[in-house]
Structures are given as structure tokens and as C-alpha cells.
Image (cartoon, rainbow, N blue to C red):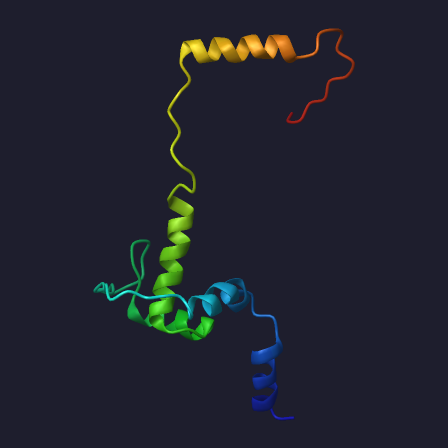
Length: 123
């Protein structure tokens, strides 16, 4: 078997952590509905914390076996999941009245008596 043949077999059968991490997202995303909204993306002249070059996007696309647009969607999706809250904002801090009610309930519901055993979780 030639090196080229073994590479082709490995490309389709070997574990590739970068590809496999996003496989479900990538293959599921191909069927996602799109919109006619568009965005102009201007690339940086060098890679930094705040942007990347076109060459970097092309390298990612090749590594993940997707097109450059999908690379941008993957990156933005990952950033959104890391930064944006995934829950509804709450009503803010409890009022004094609410705190007193919680303490009253805790006093009524917590067991009373001698401590049988204590465990230290951190320390």
C-alpha cells in the first residue's frame, strides 16, 4: 500500500480531534436555513487576539474540511456560547423581606440537634 493510499484511508477512518469535535455541528449546519443577510469581513494583515489573516481562515477550512464561511460561523458560534448568557436575566438581588422569609423557612425546615459528622470539602 502506498503512502497516498494509507493517507486516504486514514483521512476517512482515523480520529481527528479537531474535525471530530465539530462534526455534528458541521454536518448538521449544511442543512440549516440561510438568510440573504450578509456581512463584509475584512481580514487582518497579521494574526492577533483581535483578528486573523485570510491565510489562517483558509488553513482552518482545510483542516476542518469545510468552506471559509463555515469556519467563520463556527468561530462566531463558539464565541457566542462562551460570552453570551444562556439563561434569562433574573430579577436582581433579593429584598430584605425575601431574605428574612428564606431564613425563616430554613430555620423551620433544617434539622435541629447534635452534629453527627462534619466533612471538609475544600481545605
